Image: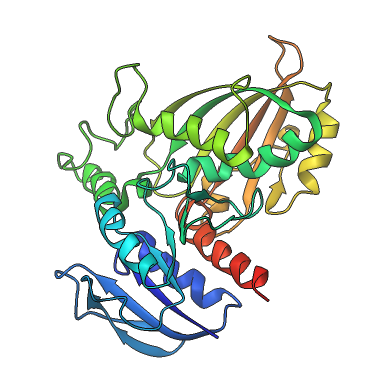
Length: 328
């Protein structure tokens, strides 16, 4: 039995973490829920028990907690994760704060295992997670030479504010979260722009993919990240080039036998992954697997997954499950 905490329990991802924990096989003795002062005092249910949400403070981890799942933003993680770590808690953090620290594990359970140089483990970016799940077995088989991502990201990736902008836009109201309306629109802009013309979101995908898959500097990666008027589940077009010769049939066979991947690839019958079929699911769905006719040994893979589940909450819970298995 282990004791767990969820930091940011009342947020979109925090709520989904509770749901995924409840569905998991983890044997949880005690669960603590933390949030800001604004949400403290709320009562949430977990496995039939009412649990009151506490305000997060520097003394919150002065108790027997084995794992803390953080989803409260980078500034909170930057301040409180080290406090929890010093108390012996293993932190699984959903923010971007720790991901590229050299001594911090960046984990997708289908792809790599934590080394635990520190007791803080980073959950990758949502679009990165769903992309590396199919890319890992393909890299093992054929060796990746180049990746070009184009993402079509749902508004739930921005939390409640993004969801509200889409719903309010349908009513003719102005956006309060995005710089332009998202309803009936597409925004080629996620996170802030950098000096190189890329956004932070795009660079996250590039840097995190290399770290998770342990790709060298000889592997080229680029990305364009786009916000679309879809409520939930991100879609990613992956254009990937390999070092070893591959065929569509071989790629389909590898992915059909890979953990966490569901192949739906029969375009003649209009069967391919879509957000409406992946929301609420923990797996990564792939399809539209085809050869890129413009260059040698390159392929297109269409990849869709629930960004709040596999892209955040499910992945965090799977990390905890992996750690529990490793310590048995």
